[in-house]
Every structure is written in C-alpha cells, then in structure tokens.
Image: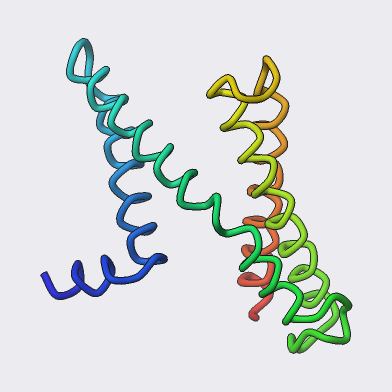
Length: 142
C-alpha cells in the first residue's frame, strides 16, 4: 500500500500506474472474447487518452530539461561520444514526439485535419527511436 501511495503522489508515479493499468487491461482484453473484451479495451483506450492529455503539459518542461543538459555534445556529462550522441538523439526524438502526438490526438478528436495516421506513425517512430537510444546506452554500459 505504501508503494502505491508513493507512486500516486508524483506525476511520474501516476503515469507509471496509469501506463501499467492501461497496458494490463489491453493485454487482458486481447485474450478475451465478446463484450468483456470490448469493455476492457474501451477502458484501456480511455486510460491511454488520459495519459496523452497529461503529456500536453510536458512540452515546455521537457524542452527546458533538454536545454539544461546542453545543446551540443560537449555539454553532456556522459563518458564517451557515442553515449553523448545517443542522448542528444534521444532528447531530440522525445521533443519531436510530443507535438506529433498532440496533433494526432487532436486530429482524432476532429479538431485538426482529417487523418491522424501519419501523425501517429511519426510519434511512434520518435518514441521508438528514443527507446532504441536508451537501450543502446544501457547495453553500452552507461
């Protein structure tokens, strides 16, 4: 119970709880058939939408954090150039991810444009690139 309370008290912790709950419900719904599957899928999608709405406010703080780290390779503290470059690529892809996701979401709501497919593809690609860079840094020992 104490772990839950600690998680729920911070933005990052609530996001972890929501992400875990949403993905768990999506996984469970994929194993079921009929009405139960549909209902769990709806809840999972709503949780995902809530996370998107919460991330609407991450653009400027995220940009500020990236700026604090330094815009060039020499401003970063990693031990080697590869890790520094991976960090820069990851930061840039994360900064591009946010507006792409916001535009895709607003397009799905009917606020912008007609098709969100390319915006979702762009946001997913940015997310995957950032994840890949983090994985490569981890495998490289940083």
